[in-house]
Amino acid sequence: MNRFRTSKYKNTTPKIGKKEEWISNTHGGSIFSQGNHIKASSKLVVFSTEQAGGGMLGLSSVKPGADGQRNVTHISCHSEMVCDMDFSPFDEGLLATCSGDETAKLWRLCDPELGQPSEPELALHPGLGKLELVLFHPTSSGILALGATNSPLLWDTSRQDSPLAVLENHGDQLQSLSWKHDGSLLASSCKDKMLRVFDPRAQLSAVQSTKGLQNNKDSRILWTKEDLLLTTGFDMMRGREVRVWDSRKMTSSISSLSLGTSNG
Image 1 (tube, helix red, strand yellow):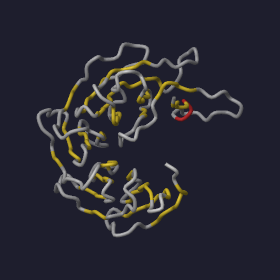
Image 2 (cartoon, rainbow, N blue to C red):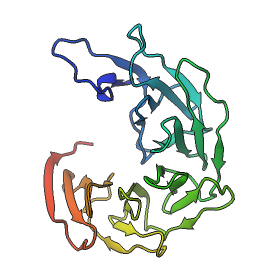
Image 3 (tube, rainbow, N blue to C red):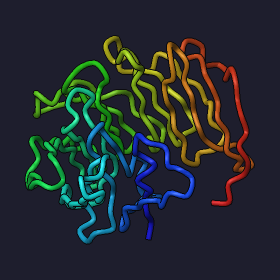
Image 4 (cartoon, one colour):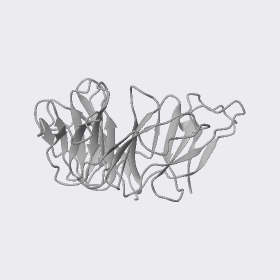
């Protein structure tokens, strides 16, 4: 059984000797999914669980109640495993989820002590197979980036019938997506070992790309500040590595750090 420490997402630092708090019966990750298995807004925490049903999420408050306890409730979100989840940067109670059942959904969550919705506010059906990744746009309310098996797409949630754009197919499984902080660019990492940067307003193909990963094992990409990207992945010897890239010129990384060898 996997467990998350509540101190991982509390805004306080545990004192030495203080008893640690846990939320039990949670599922912290899966080899079948590229997305997140825990996410938090300023008030709520959601996480994948081992409850029966496969598409269940656990919901709790970031802060404990007056009695010092956290109530955990469970929400049936999908007919298959929830692959990824993300809270809206504009509404801390609005959660996007995606799943192996090929849908993405928006949920209006409330305090865990209250009743949660049995139906989503919105369900999207791109028709591109299993959805692995979901990410809210950081500056435009209602815009989502979705990752199907090898196709990133953008969706305006006010238009349910079709996506705004389907970006160029990747050569293999999408592993991560990340928006630049101003929302102008979208970066991806992929099992084909490629890193790509898109300007979706200008074109559907990548504006920058490089074969920057040595190993096709799990990778992540993240915008840091200005034009810098950070990636995590593995080298040919299965050593963990972190690299920093200039998104304007991705012929080679500008910095790297080795973190040791994986036994997985």
